Image 1 (cartoon, rainbow, N blue to C red):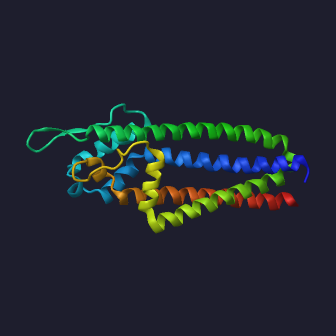
Image 2 (tube, rainbow, N blue to C red):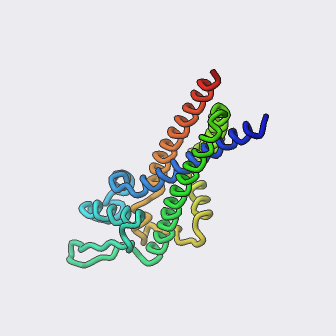
Length: 229
């Protein structure tokens, strides 16, 4: 194989990896900042009788959380007046500190999305200069997409078999402290977002990402066959 053909195959692989990363970052930021989605999942997995938060305050609570994660809100706190006229602050300082760590991950996610898009533009330019090797580029893209699909499939199987173990590992890798280990008896945050809440979120995210990757792989396979002729 000539150096030009190797370069085209590498360009295709890098294009697929950048596409997969951009799609994941886009979905994470979009789903994490979606108030309707979060509200629906809280209603299903964290009803008022389990959280102690009155039903009428859910929309405003969800809006505060999603605005905070999206960077539109600076303070992670929610207060309301209970039936006895007492003003209640919902979150303790350690819950606020943990959500500050979570927000940093979302900020990182948006940075990754920007870098991935820039990488796609640069690689797209490279692919254009190698357009005489477009079949090699498509084959490299297909190989990279299939590799990512394999990794995602392994994570899906792991999540189905032991989601809690995967969840704990993610938190230990993502955070440098133990503030994520909340107590449902005292901390509203974990009552609003129990394990089943995250399982549902992960299923939606993983399923959408998997579907997107599969479509990219199918498109690359089609083009590699078409350009062969």
